[in-house]
Length: 337
Ligand code: PHE
Image: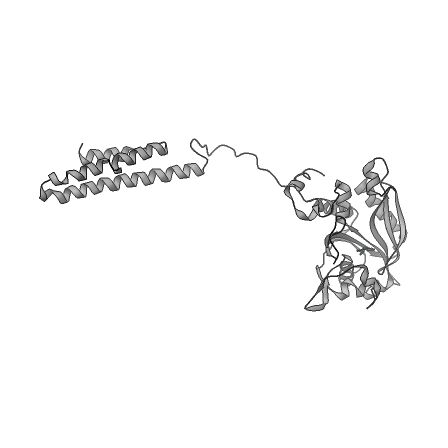
């Protein structure tokens, strides 16, 4: 075979497997390969021809090596694309979708319910000053009421803390908007509490605030009743007297959950009633501190914890599950709503 013919053979070669390619390499470049054999014959070549002979051998060697490189490349990119016989026009397999976090589901549902009756959504900072988190909300300086909510303070600035409740947003909204005010404020809050199955140092609340002329306690009750019906599908609520520095009178709201099965007994501690929020008429001191005239306006506020509601809604026994983001847990929430 002439060198030209060999070059043609190399050029025409193609391999469909790694084995075929290896056989090709051995045939030319192996220890007993063609190029070795031909190199051994150089001594029989006329001395004046030896240089040209050597060059032709080198050309062959280069051609073989290049061919091997090209085929190897093609094989590995084919492998990446999914192996031989890949049809790139085929529709891809079904993508697995993630699921919404239960806390987000509950927040979104609460937002939707209040938006239907004219509430809009407000926000405030999570790192808050003493004024908005405490003082303007009628927590006197050095007053034990401040200990109701264990606080994470910012070390470098004792006036700043992680907000302990979304009630701080009430103050911010009243400072910046004129009544009528109708807002809900969902968000993260922080308390310096030991983590257990029922309590966590980070959680979420939804605050509500309604300020206008002539707003009464009956308006508040009606609004909460509407919410309880829309969210829980339960029609019976009760208000128990309570205390918050920023509302007067204050109440805690229970919804009648029923006692039909074992779970009902567990989550209502055998009473049939489930506590869902705190509420009350905005204290005149708070209106004043926020620049609203309490002789003209009145209003109500409420606040609820999202995790607590999510736990009841989905039968989650341990609040920590809502923060671990274990994919096996979250997967079960797919389509839960
Ligand atoms: N901020 C209160 C809490 O975190 C809840 C609340 C909000 C109570 C508004 C009354 C009115 O416990």
